[in-house]
Image 1 (cartoon, rainbow, N blue to C red):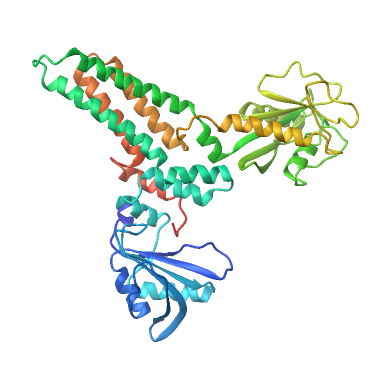
Image 2: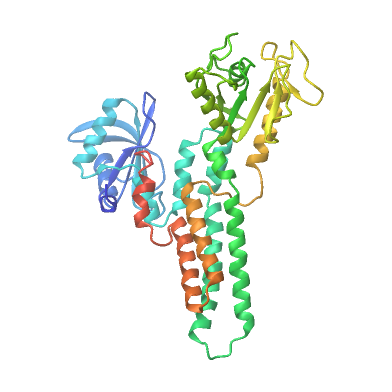
Length: 431
C-alpha cells in the first residue's frame, strides 16, 4: 500500500464498531462528495451535528431505519465532510448499506485512513494520532490516562516548545554567520550556547524517563526461587487463575508461564519460572537458563525463599518473600506469605504496588511512550552534541537545523510522508 493510495479524494467508509453481535453498528464515511451520498441515502441532508432518524433508501428499497449524523468539514474528525450512520447491527443490514455506498461511489477505508486524513488536514499531529491508537488498545486505567493526555497534546506541546527554542537559537546562529563583520555582542554567542546546552540536558533527562513505555507495554514481574518453593502457587493466587500446575514434586515447571494481570490500574505480566538449582537434566537445565534470562529482563523480581533459605545472596532490586509461613514464620522484617491460608498476600500486593508506583511515577512532564519517540529524541540529542563541538559556525548551524528537523518528524511538522504508512498500518479499519 503506497501513500498515494490513501491521499485520493474519494469518499471512504468503514464500520467503526467492534465485530460480533450487537444492537447498533456505526458506519462512518469521510471525503469530498459525502453530502451527495448522504443525501441520496436519506432524501435530504440532516442538520449539521444533529442526530436525525431517517429511512435509508437505495435502488427503490428501504435498507434500514437509522440515525444519520452529518459532519461538514473542516470541523470534523478528519477535517473533511463526513457522516455517520447508526444502523441496526444485523450482518445483512451492514452488508446491504456497504453495497449501497459502493454503488454511490465510495470505497472501503484502509487501516488507519480516517486518522491519517485527520493528520494530513492538520486536525491531529502524529503524536496525537499514535495516542488515538493507544486509547483504542488501552486495557488498564494507567494506559487510558496516559493515552488521553497524549491525545490532548501534552507530548506535542513539549516537543513543539523544544523546536521553537531551537528555531530561536538557529536564528541567532544565522545572524552570527550572515553578519560576521557587524561586531555583534559576544553575549549573543554565549547565550545561544547556553540555550542549546540546556535543551540538550532536558532531552537527555527525557530519554532517561521510561515511565511512558512501561505503562504502555506493561511491567514484567518475575517469580523466581528454588524448586517447590511455591512459585506456581503464588502465580495462581495473585492472578486468580489456575494457570500453573501445582504439585509436591520439585521441578514441575520446566518453562516460563506468563499471565497478564492488572494491579491498581497498571498492566503487569506475571511470569512463573523454573526452579533454580544445579541439575543434569537437559530439559530442566534449559528451563533454568530461561528463568535466569527472565530474571535479568524483569522490571520486578519476587524471589521466593523456603523456610531454610537465606536472603543474603539476593540483589537489592529483588524482593525477598518467605513462603509457607503456615509451617514456619518469616524472620523479622521480611515479607512472609502462605498461599495455602492466604496470609501475607495482602501485604505482598501492597509491597508490589509500591514498587510499581516507584517505577511508573515521577515528574509532571509527559513521558515518551514509543520507540519511535526515543529514536527521534536520541537523534536530536546527537546533533546538539555535534553542535556543541562544532569548530565552525556554519557546521554548528547545520547541526542545529538537523536537530530541529528530528523533533519535527516526531510531531509530523516536517517530512512526514515517509512515516505515514508505517504508523497508520497499525490502526483498525474504522479508525
